[in-house]
Image (tube, rainbow, N blue to C red):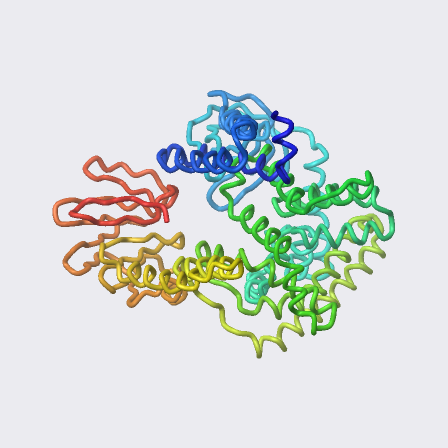
Length: 566
C-alpha cells in the first residue's frame, strides 16, 4: 500500500525536501518561537495528510524526524575539543572556523590565515546561533598550524592569482576579475560593487548558476559532457562552494546525468534535490539570505521563463531569451528584496542585457588564468584581454549612467501588496473572478497598518528605530554612518532624527542613548533595547535583543511590550 501511494505522488522528492526544510525551520526557531514552530510543523503535515493520505504522511514523517536528527547532531559538540579547524571567514568582528563540518567562533589573538588548517585545543562555550549555524564559541588554549591540504592549497592559489593580477593591472581591476571569475569578493572596489547593485547584476560577484553554466558550457564544448562536469565540480570547490554554485552544480549534474543514463528529468525535482543535499550538510542554510535568493530566483525561472518567453515572441530571439530569464528570476526575488534589503534596482533589465555578456567573457578569461598561471607570458596575455574587457565595461557604464533610473525603495508593505496581487491574478486566471477584490482589501490592511493605531517600534538592521503611532512615523538613530535619507524612503518615515542623548515621542515614551544601545522609558517602566549585540548587565531592566535575536518589532500596550518577528 505504501509503494502504491508513493507511486501516485508526482515528484515525491519535492515533499521529501519540504519535510527536511520544515524540520530545519522548526528546529531553528523552536527556542524563540515554540508555538510558531509547532504550528508550522502541524500545518505541513495537515496538508500532506489531507492530500496524500496516511501512508504517504508516515513516509514523509520519517524524513521530518531525520531532519530533526540532522539538526540535533549538527549543534551537538563536546565541552572540550582537540581537533583540526579550518578558518573559513575572518572579518572585523570575529573569526569563524569549521570543525568536523560545524561552524565555531574562535576567541584567538593569533594572526590566522583564511583557508588554512590549525590544530587547536579549546574549551567550548555554549553560544550557539541557529540562525547562522554557529554551534558555539571556542576559548582557544593552544593553536598551531597544520599541513596544507587540497582545500587550503586552493585558497592559497586564489590569493596568488590575485597578487599577480594586482602586479599586472592594479588592485581595483584585480579585485574585479577575481570577484567575477571566482566569487572572491573581499577585494572588490566599493564603487564597482555599487555599480553592479545599481544595475541589478550584483550576483556577478558571487559564483552563481550563471557562472557554473558559463564554465560548464565552455568545458563541455572542448572536453565533452563527463570531463566537463568533473572539472566544473572542481571549479565549484575552488570558488568556495556557496549555495548558488552547489545548487547549480547539483541541478546540472541531474540534468546531464539524465541524458547520460537516458532517464527523464524534472526541473523542480532537480531543484528540490539540490536543496535537500545542501540542507543535509548545512541544516542552518534554510535561514540564510543567500539560500533564499538563489532558490527563489531559480524557482521563478523554472515556473515562468517559458511563459514570459512566449509573451515576448515579437522580440529577436537572443533578446527575448535573455529578457525572459531576467524577468522570471525577479518575480519571486522582488518581494524578498523589499522585505530584507528595502531597495530594488529598476535598471536590472538594462544591466542584464548590456553587461552580462561581458561578465560571461570575464568569467571565461578569468578562469583561463588558472591553467596559464605557470606560464608567465600566457598569464600576462589573458590579463591583457581581461584589462580590455574591463576598460570597455567601464566606458559602457559611464555612457549608460546618463540614462539609469534611481534605486526603488520599499518595505514589507510593498511586498505584501505585490504578493496579494500575484495571488489575485493567479486565481482570476483560474476562473475565480471574486479575487479581483483582493488587492483592494490588501490596500485597506496596509493603510491601517501604516496608520498604526497601536504604538510600535520597529528595528532596522542598519541600526535605526522606526516609532509609529496614529499616522506619525519617526525614524531615529544614534549612528552617524547610517544613510538616513535612504532608510526614510524605505520606511515611509514622516520625520527622521539623529539623536545623541535623549528623544521624546508624544509624551508617550522617551529614548536615552547608552553607547550603542537605548533605554526605552514608558510611564512606569524602563527597558533596554540592545542594538549592539554586546552582552548587557542591567539588573533593573528588561532587555529586548534586537541585534542578534529574531525580534525586530515591539508593540506597546499599557506599558507592556509585545515582541514580534515580522
